[in-house]
Amino acid sequence: MKLFHSIRTTIALLAVAAVPAVAVPATASAATACRTAWGSLPEASNRVSTATLATVRAGRHACFDRVVFDLTGTPTSYSAHYVSNVFRAGAGHLVPIRGGAKLEIMLGVREFDDDGHWAFQPANDSELANVAGFRTVRQIAYAGSNEGAAWVGIGLRARLPFRVFTLDGPGSGSRVVVDIAHRW
Image (cartoon, rainbow, N blue to C red; front, side, top):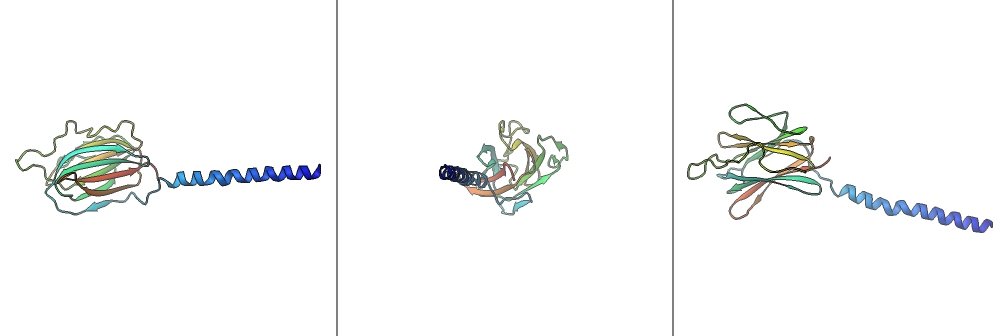
């Protein structure tokens, strides 16, 4: 009986020890799947371009929300940084933005197209893209343009890591992309 009891105890201990060994890698891989090396400090590029802002769109990804600024021309200068409030370019009026944190984006784009018309005329300055149901982005609002630059405020759930980069295309256009992580 003593031998049977010790075999049963050994099997039970091995079974208990095997469960965490199997479960830990799955948990660890899920936790590392969304790790980024991004931060929350200002980012900028000082490229010179004659591009104009064409459209603003947004998308959801597993680990981050994305805002894309479509440009008509080569990649342009940009800056992105957290601010306490976003103000209307040139006028200084407060731009109301939903969310616990506000990311201000400046794009070095022309205000007028080659025919002298306003290059970017959104249907609704307060809602440049539909972000309903997004995990991090709460609102994307146009803050105007002035002296060769356009400003956009992005309302976020909280101050979270972000990155900014440019992409060529489609066609002769380009894109400025802002990714905001869902968590630290």
